Image 1 (cartoon, helix red, strand yellow):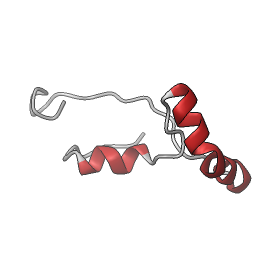
Image 2: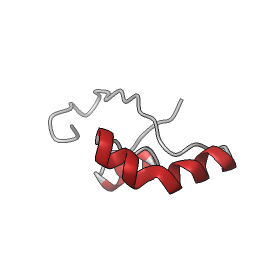
Image 3: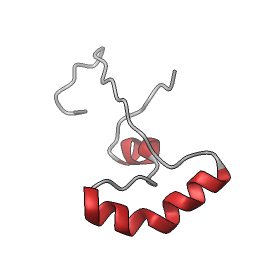
Length: 61
């Protein structure tokens, strides 16, 4: 995305990640392997960290 987006362009992302609620987040951590195997979704990842690792500089609104 970073390669094909114009300098003044925008990349809009809507993603879910690990819950900020302590109990829900812990549940996601415990069940992550089974959930990913069944549905292919790693629901406890931190999407902003992944975006930053890709070299994209997000503006969170």
